[in-house]
Length: 142
Image (cartoon, rainbow, N blue to C red; front, side, top):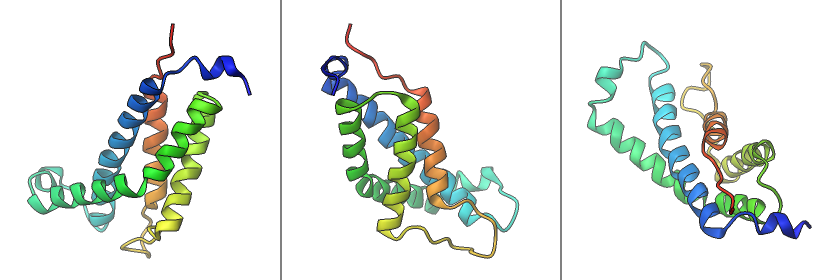
């Protein structure tokens, strides 16, 4: 194990990086999942959706459940960053694997409308977390 790599990133930096990724992924993914899954049978009218109280309650509920279910995955990701690598391509691969495993073990792979083509929830979360990992920077010690 390369001890030089272990000293380049502080625990606080990893914590705040993961906190941004964790919260953003769950909120954005809940919004997109509900929009795609609940309104897949017709044209999406965002002006109506955004002003419905029930829609935002559902987004909040799914985001909170997602935050709770993804705690083990975020802890594993933090350990990988601290002990192994901060290479973003490797982190994206690991995150996609962690998302799929989390959805599999929580039983959340099912869809509301199985006959229609709707991206599975794990795909939506994987795309969003991958984009966020690429966008958000990990600041190393100087």
